[in-house]
Length: 317
Image (cartoon, rainbow, N blue to C red; front, side, top):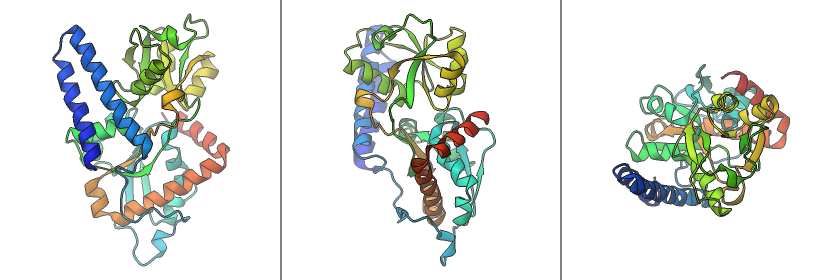
């Protein structure tokens, strides 16, 4: 990890520890400081997506892949992956379905039960129970590294925010009509103090709507629509494929485009492994990277590929 990244995440960790010991008003100040520091970290990521951590094993080639056909195949032929049930992991399933991993001499075993949040996959990755986490959000992974939970390498960048790929939605009869109306409201977030709330705070601040803070409640993405329908939260900050499902099933109404303003193009997630795994298995890591990138190109060229994969991902949760 670069010295710049270490410095950024260390400052975040210090702010978090300080905020926890303050009184009510002090806690708010600590939280604001923590958000400023996280926002700085994300600006650096946005300026150079994944470059801070990207695996340097000579696997940046953009060919359609034939790593196994060369003289040396992968050191490890079977790779175990924990995947989040999000569009962030779509390329994993596309590569699996189209035989791209097989072309690289790999057998990829995706855990039957997906992890609902990136943070849930960190222990399994650190302990070697899985080799790769697909769709791990960068802030969670950076925080885990700073805590000393693991030494991280990003094999492949995942997704960046595009318009209406992660929106704040409400029930159709909700009195919440604009971003300003979210002040003081209960909003569902997949993980607290993560890239989600950070980018929503930045959007609201850019619009001059930050007088009263949003009350974030932790709800896994697959459960957000139900929590919204039952009135447990007043709004849900939700991503695909659950966003489309909520809009169709509940007629949920969008009040904030989560990729607007300062959040536009923000890098969100990637495919993460440990430093030990990549150092011991550089050809395996390179083969995995080529297969996923090949699938990402397919999805970029044909949105139907992505849509079919999203339907399968949602049904697996």
